[in-house]
Amino acid sequence: MEKNERYIATATGYSEDGAGVTRINGIVIFVPGLLNGEEAEIGITKMKKNYGYGRIIKILKPSIHRIDPICSVYKQCGGCQLQHMDSNEQNTFKENKVKDCFHKIAGMNVEIQPIIKVEPYWNYRNKVQIPVQCNDNKVEMGFYAPHSNHI
Image (cartoon, rainbow, N blue to C red; front, side, top):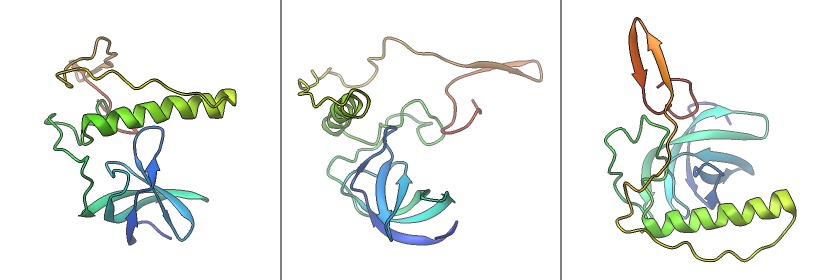
Protein backbone atom coordinates (compact mmCIF):
# COMPACT_ATOMS: atom_id res chain seq x y z
CA MET A 1 0.00 0.00 0.00
CA GLU A 2 1.46 3.35 -1.04
CA LYS A 3 0.69 7.05 -0.87
CA ASN A 4 -1.95 8.25 -3.37
CA GLU A 5 -3.41 4.78 -3.96
CA ARG A 6 -7.20 4.70 -3.83
CA TYR A 7 -9.43 2.17 -2.10
CA ILE A 8 -13.06 1.62 -1.14
CA ALA A 9 -13.29 1.33 2.65
CA THR A 10 -15.90 1.25 5.42
CA ALA A 11 -15.29 2.77 8.85
CA THR A 12 -15.73 0.31 11.71
CA GLY A 13 -15.11 2.73 14.56
CA TYR A 14 -13.24 5.86 15.62
CA SER A 15 -9.72 6.71 16.68
CA GLU A 16 -9.17 8.69 19.87
CA ASP A 17 -9.36 11.97 17.93
CA GLY A 18 -12.52 11.01 16.02
CA ALA A 19 -11.04 9.84 12.71
CA GLY A 20 -12.79 6.91 11.06
CA VAL A 21 -10.95 3.59 11.45
CA THR A 22 -10.88 1.31 8.40
CA ARG A 23 -8.95 -1.83 7.49
CA ILE A 24 -7.57 -2.46 4.04
CA ASN A 25 -5.83 -5.80 3.50
CA GLY A 26 -5.51 -6.08 7.29
CA ILE A 27 -3.82 -2.69 7.68
CA VAL A 28 -5.52 0.00 9.78
CA ILE A 29 -6.08 3.28 7.96
CA PHE A 30 -7.25 6.37 9.88
CA VAL A 31 -9.51 8.65 7.83
CA PRO A 32 -10.43 12.04 9.34
CA GLY A 33 -14.06 12.97 8.70
CA LEU A 34 -15.26 9.42 8.00
CA LEU A 35 -18.13 8.32 10.24
CA ASN A 36 -18.62 4.86 11.68
CA GLY A 37 -20.43 2.69 9.11
CA GLU A 38 -19.77 5.00 6.17
CA GLU A 39 -18.35 3.62 2.95
CA ALA A 40 -16.08 5.90 0.97
CA GLU A 41 -13.47 6.05 -1.71
CA ILE A 42 -10.31 7.08 0.12
CA GLY A 43 -6.83 8.08 -0.93
CA ILE A 44 -3.80 7.06 1.10
CA THR A 45 -1.96 10.15 2.38
CA LYS A 46 0.71 8.60 4.60
CA MET A 47 1.91 5.08 5.39
CA LYS A 48 3.75 3.80 8.44
CA LYS A 49 4.95 0.24 8.99
CA ASN A 50 1.70 -1.13 10.47
CA TYR A 51 -0.89 1.57 9.78
CA GLY A 52 -1.63 4.56 7.60
CA TYR A 53 -3.70 7.68 7.05
CA GLY A 54 -6.16 8.49 4.33
CA ARG A 55 -8.47 11.21 3.11
CA ILE A 56 -12.00 11.03 1.83
CA ILE A 57 -12.26 11.36 -1.93
CA LYS A 58 -15.97 10.56 -2.17
CA ILE A 59 -18.49 9.27 0.34
CA LEU A 60 -20.37 6.39 -1.29
CA LYS A 61 -22.75 5.47 1.56
CA PRO A 62 -23.18 8.34 4.04
CA SER A 63 -24.13 7.79 7.67
CA ILE A 64 -27.50 8.97 8.97
CA HIS A 65 -25.41 10.82 11.59
CA ARG A 66 -23.57 13.00 9.05
CA ILE A 67 -24.41 16.70 9.13
CA ASP A 68 -22.96 19.79 7.48
CA PRO A 69 -20.47 21.50 9.82
CA ILE A 70 -21.64 24.95 10.91
CA CYS A 71 -18.11 26.37 11.10
CA SER A 72 -16.85 28.03 7.93
CA VAL A 73 -13.22 26.97 8.59
CA TYR A 74 -14.03 23.43 9.76
CA LYS A 75 -11.79 21.71 7.19
CA GLN A 76 -8.74 23.87 7.94
CA CYS A 77 -9.10 24.09 11.73
CA GLY A 78 -8.25 21.48 14.33
CA GLY A 79 -10.55 22.91 17.00
CA CYS A 80 -13.81 21.24 16.07
CA GLN A 81 -13.07 17.91 14.41
CA LEU A 82 -16.46 16.37 15.33
CA GLN A 83 -18.76 18.94 13.69
CA HIS A 84 -19.65 16.55 10.86
CA MET A 85 -21.35 14.26 13.46
CA ASP A 86 -24.84 14.90 14.78
CA SER A 87 -25.21 15.35 18.54
CA ASN A 88 -26.23 11.70 19.12
CA GLU A 89 -23.11 10.37 17.37
CA GLN A 90 -20.88 12.89 19.18
CA ASN A 91 -22.29 11.77 22.53
CA THR A 92 -21.79 8.09 21.64
CA PHE A 93 -18.20 8.85 20.58
CA LYS A 94 -17.52 10.72 23.84
CA GLU A 95 -19.09 8.02 26.03
CA ASN A 96 -17.04 5.32 24.29
CA LYS A 97 -13.89 7.40 24.64
CA VAL A 98 -14.38 7.59 28.43
CA LYS A 99 -15.07 3.82 28.61
CA ASP A 100 -11.97 3.07 26.51
CA CYS A 101 -9.78 5.24 28.76
CA PHE A 102 -10.94 3.40 31.87
CA HIS A 103 -10.41 0.05 30.15
CA LYS A 104 -7.02 0.74 28.55
CA ILE A 105 -5.45 2.83 31.32
CA ALA A 106 -6.98 1.40 34.50
CA GLY A 107 -8.05 -2.04 33.29
CA MET A 108 -11.59 -1.33 34.47
CA ASN A 109 -14.86 -2.01 32.69
CA VAL A 110 -17.18 0.73 33.87
CA GLU A 111 -20.74 1.66 33.07
CA ILE A 112 -20.99 5.26 31.92
CA GLN A 113 -24.09 7.31 32.56
CA PRO A 114 -25.51 8.81 29.37
CA ILE A 115 -24.27 12.28 28.54
CA ILE A 116 -26.82 14.97 29.30
CA LYS A 117 -27.53 16.80 26.06
CA VAL A 118 -27.05 20.53 25.92
CA GLU A 119 -29.51 22.51 23.81
CA PRO A 120 -28.62 24.26 21.64
CA TYR A 121 -25.80 21.82 20.93
CA TRP A 122 -23.39 24.43 19.53
CA ASN A 123 -21.61 27.39 21.14
CA TYR A 124 -21.42 25.86 24.61
CA ARG A 125 -17.65 25.75 25.24
CA ASN A 126 -16.70 27.25 28.57
CA LYS A 127 -12.93 26.91 28.21
CA VAL A 128 -10.63 27.36 25.27
CA GLN A 129 -6.86 27.64 24.80
CA ILE A 130 -5.89 29.70 21.79
CA PRO A 131 -2.29 29.75 20.55
CA VAL A 132 -0.79 33.14 19.67
CA GLN A 133 2.24 33.86 17.50
CA CYS A 134 3.92 36.81 15.79
CA ASN A 135 4.77 36.68 12.08
CA ASP A 136 6.24 39.69 10.29
CA ASN A 137 5.11 42.03 13.08
CA LYS A 138 1.56 40.67 12.88
CA VAL A 139 -0.12 38.90 15.76
CA GLU A 140 -1.96 35.72 14.73
CA MET A 141 -4.27 33.74 16.96
CA GLY A 142 -6.66 30.84 16.44
CA PHE A 143 -6.68 27.06 16.50
CA TYR A 144 -3.96 24.90 15.00
CA ALA A 145 -4.67 23.19 11.69
CA PRO A 146 -4.93 19.42 12.26
CA HIS A 147 -1.60 17.69 12.96
CA SER A 148 0.44 20.87 12.49
CA ASN A 149 1.85 23.97 14.17
CA HIS A 150 0.06 26.29 11.73
CA ILE A 151 -2.57 28.63 13.14
